[in-house]
Length: 435
Ligand SMILES: NC(=O)c1ccc[n+]([C@@H]2O[C@H](COP(=O)([O-])OP(=O)(O)OC[C@H]3O[C@@H](n4cnc5c(N)ncnc54)[C@H](O)[C@@H]3O)[C@@H](O)[C@H]2O)c1
Ligand SMILES: [Fe+2]
Image 1 (cartoon, protein in one colour):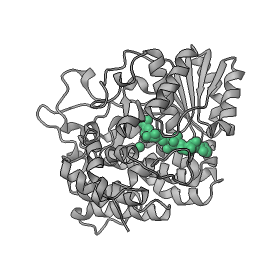
Image 2 (spheres, rainbow, N blue to C red; image 1 turned 90 degrees about the horizontal axis):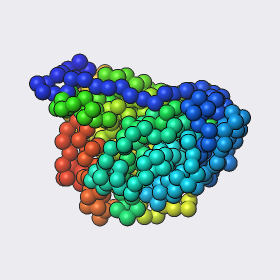
Image 3 (cartoon, helix red, strand yellow; image 1 turned 30 degrees about the vertical axis):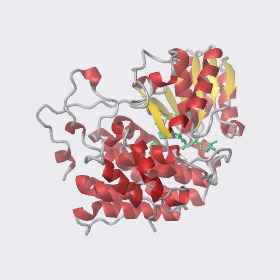
């Protein structure tokens, strides 16, 4: 199937897609401009969000110095929880509300940027946490209006939270991850300075690379935007629209860049020239999936992360058990590609090729397998756990994992084929061990 036929228009079907992204600034040294940028956005009193480990890095010192140099008041909040929870989101929101700030700067990974988004939202429009949280966990009420300006400065490269209108957290009581998704949550500006990546531990680099791969591959293989019914009104067009030609372009290049640079970046942590393309790839995939959407591996990951018992991975803080996001996603991905491959065969082959596979003699019926093999090869090279069994799960957990994945309808509906309860049960079983 060619890209053109993938987007064939259907009677009564969607006929248009939108391209939305934060304004972005990319380059070595760009962090030093955050003060001037914050001032230009009208900030006078800034809440600088970070976490306890990142707070000790030069990147935060540079940002704080730049903000103060521009004459702005700055208060640092470094209590962000890594892999945030409802509890830590609300703690960040209380700080934001009490401090009477007029702008936010986040310096950190997805955990920090997402917490700053939520803090900005609940300080701007106070409400119970569940008011704006995605259905069926929350009420999914639309954000009432614009938030205060927020400049997101990533120090990781996987989540692309600087590009998206999403904030993800772990709902402790329900043992599952969920989030808030609304275009008003998009930061006003993202400042991507690759120098931040030189201190990133190797396991976090690998997990981020797999998060980028998953965003890009899931976007590329998503149901085409033309498969949805046309909206009743332009404003009803969803944030995540399904695969479209613009996200295809960004995601294909993101897959190629990660594949070409990840191994060298892990072997030579100080070589900024290998980490810079990783950050660029993460940004491209973010612009892509921020408009198209992720599907089954991400939907499954929220259950895998939420039900964690005692897994404490090397490279992350060990104060609580967690399956970090990139790991919780990639452990499901090969099983998913094997199942859904036939529904978007050409796209699975395209992704396998972008990761370095020779696809000349691979028939379409093996497309999902070919992509799964590429992902598994890279999982082994980068020291990923060998499936869900290595992060503490067994077949006895399949029902609970499935129960927590089915509510992720927003994501499951974007898969290129329908996903049933029994599909999910089989996918979790197949994800237990790969080699
Ligand atoms: N908003 C979105 O669109 C989106 C998309 C995907 C994932 N997420 C969420 O983002 C979170 C994961 O974010 P992440 O992968 O960026 O990691 P993270 O923010 O959780 O950070 C991982 C670890 O790396 C440390 N760290 C961060 N930058 C560092 C640096 N430069 N040097 C040394 N250590 C550094 C942190 O202190 C932490 O211990 C999850 O909660 C996930 O669900 C959000
Ligand atoms: Fe992700």
